[in-house]
Image 1 (cartoon, rainbow, N blue to C red):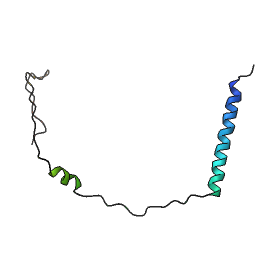
Image 2 (cartoon, rainbow, N blue to C red):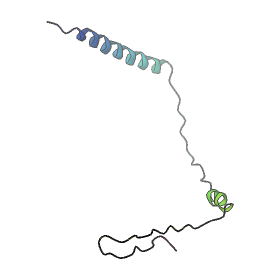
Image 3 (cartoon, rainbow, N blue to C red):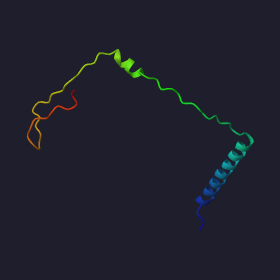
Image 4 (cartoon, helix red, strand yellow):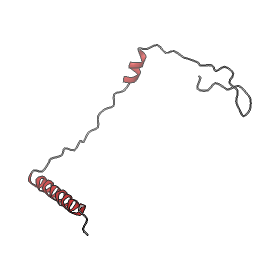
Amino acid sequence: MENPLRKVFVHLDKSAFLRRKFHLMKMEMFPVEREEITYKRKKAKGKRQALLAQFDSEEVHHRLEDCICPDCQGEPKEIGAS
């Protein structure tokens, strides 16, 4: 008993093969020229700082009530503050 899907898969294999062959023939007939970039773009310096300088900075400290460490039963320490 022959699997009916076999014919479908054979057709798909052939069509994929033909598409690839056609693509290769087209590339041989019409080669694509590629440009190689030999320079590097200059990175814009200070743009972020200039943008952020127009805003006022505001420090927000959140304090949790009834927060106790489960390991040492002590109060949490503030981190990240300068």
